[in-house]
Image 1 (cartoon, rainbow, N blue to C red):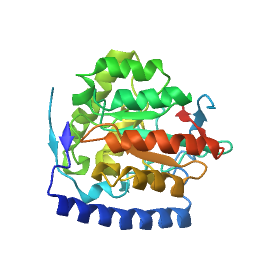
Image 2: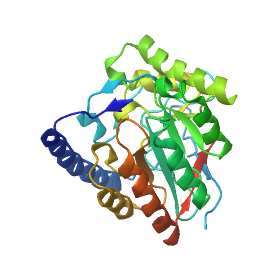
Image 3: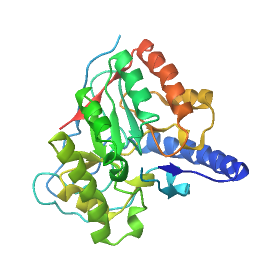
Image 4: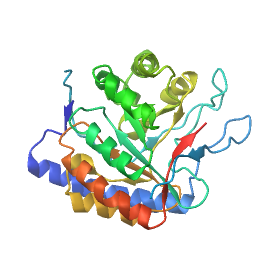
Length: 284
């Protein structure tokens, strides 16, 4: 799956704009303390617990978009979905847990070029992460889904073809999310419990349909901007500058050349561990 194919000048402009927007978003989040989604009419829902060990060819061209700059969480109707998963009004932008814990997430894969290298680094340090997979990639790389699960990583839903969900009719949203959940369940034996809207763009329909499928929405605290290939040092700097308890880090293991993402992980992960952070995954 290839994306972000654009002239270098345009890529640079978008990356600069992304950096400014992401910095503004972090400042707003710090002011408003959005630790967890707002509750529905049934009362507040507990934030997810964190878990995890402690550490010592379908090719789709996707255009880059300003929607990558920060998670967009439009409001959902105040009602509950069928079953026990509430319809959220906003996605989780952090995962509050015990002590100095953080969550690493990777989007758009699995990609046989980059995902195995990321899995190798995570395995080396004995930590678990979340992988939000696209169905069209997952169906071709079921072995990598199994490897993720065997290593204890959380496999989440990132839609089938990475569209802007708010631009789709509800039936199309259900198809995008439902088909991907089906591939994951058929491969791993259990459906995904978490999902991330492409570009962080949710609306009331995607919140409601995600809940119907039994999934909670996960956004991010730290956007590494690795999708625009800013340089390994820049990615490492963004993670370390934004590191804080409960932070969710957004990176990518597919969608383009992810060599910088792979190299950056091997640098910032040991730094986080040395700084006393525990890398965990949420549990429900």
